[in-house]
Image 1: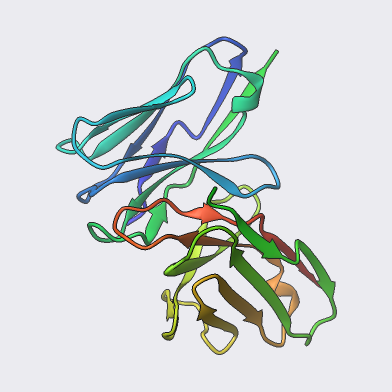
Image 2: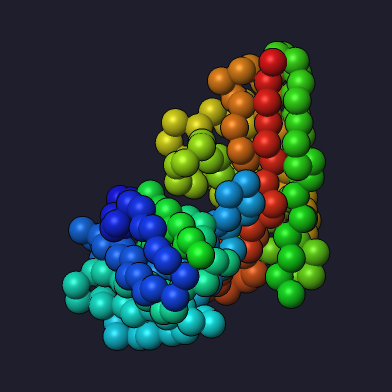
Length: 111
Length: 116
């Protein structure tokens, strides 16, 4: 079942913060986060494997609440380069690399 | 590291033509490769999982005779769209995973296919 992402779209001014959520009605074994810029391939950001795990990539960090079956991606002091569509992905089964992706969250950062 | 090359990046051809797309992992061995289809402003739709040396596993609703997948080596998988028609026009993206559990997917740059 496809993870649910919210919000669908976000518009920010450079320097502002944003949170993107990813949730599932089924167990989330792990959560993968990717960013895709228009016309390009998705780029891997990070994987969260355990409940409570938090990770960071530049000024982008994420948390994973296994019990609540959700993950959040935090973009701090956004830069123009953060613009793109963010996808969360969850494995079909634990430990496997085959993912089902959420519908995506479109982020636009303006000067 | 973890570079995946996809070729060609753009194809325009007539209806009825078969089109072959290559996906190569350049600096790692990819036990598993995935093929996706993406429509404008939509998510990545998994078409099939390709494992080296075995038959591909197709997702429900994907015609295996229409989309032929071959994974002949640990660095190369190919997708052939047979007898392509305008409704097959789309953005096709491959990804490759190193061996092991909980590995990230590394994506190719995608192929934009337009069937006239």
